[in-house]
Length: 81
Image 1: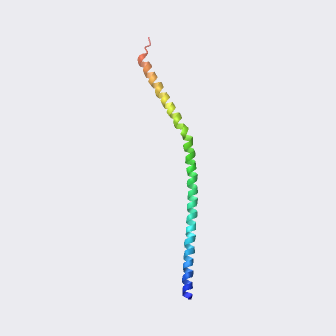
Image 2: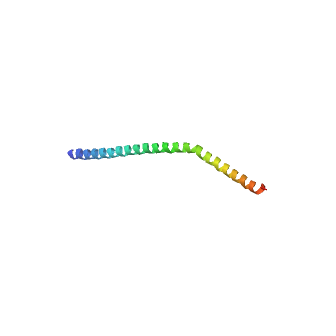
Image 3: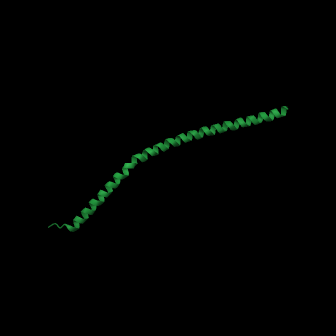
């Protein structure tokens, strides 16, 4: 009988240790998840800011290309006397 109690006590001690390790691991995962959510929010904010920026760059590029084409056409077709 005392031998069974010792085995049970050892098994309970092992289970408590495993539970403690799992709790620590779960806490680390929760902290990691919190950090990832924070970084994701930062990336989302950056993407929202860039959303209008590419449109402005495309407008400027299109305007520059149109101006260049108009200048090339004018240089070929307009004669200065």
